Image 1 (tube, each protein chain N blue to C red):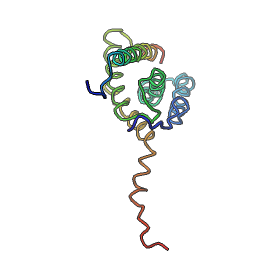
Image 2 (cartoon, chains in turn brown, green):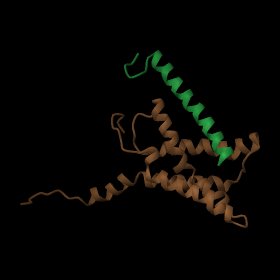
Image 3 (cartoon, rainbow over the protein chains, first blue to last red):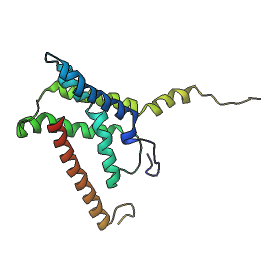
Image 4 (cartoon, each protein chain N blue to C red):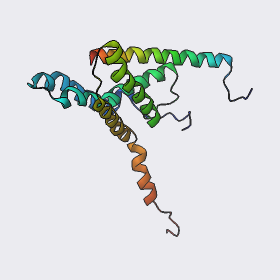
Length: 144
Length: 36
């Protein structure tokens, strides 16, 4: 991807970010306080699956301000992968083992990975939709 | 030196930016760990 291509990713105005943030807020303020029994999904896995779509746009915005990110393209697969690797180590090993905060559950890593993959598909939907359209397009030889 | 490679000051600037990004990441990760 050429550095001069600016892109159109909205960071904090991105619809995937805003929708994920809304789900997180609803879960934290409304669903979790009203649950009378422990729910692994609402108390753990849902938050983990929202890590990439909620946190990554803010991280990338800061990198853009710093000057490390050359354009405003939607998050790339390697950007998501690098952050997932750091977060898995930090939240599931460093936090529980060193800081004694958080829980080391392999399912949480899977939730984070699944959320990251869904977010990547939604962020890349532009060219994912364009590929089938380009394959369907035929040259107009002989058109009147 | 190849013209595509950054000069000494450019390396220094890149290192400073990387350091700033890592500092931000450490702080933001700590906020997420304790607040979310």
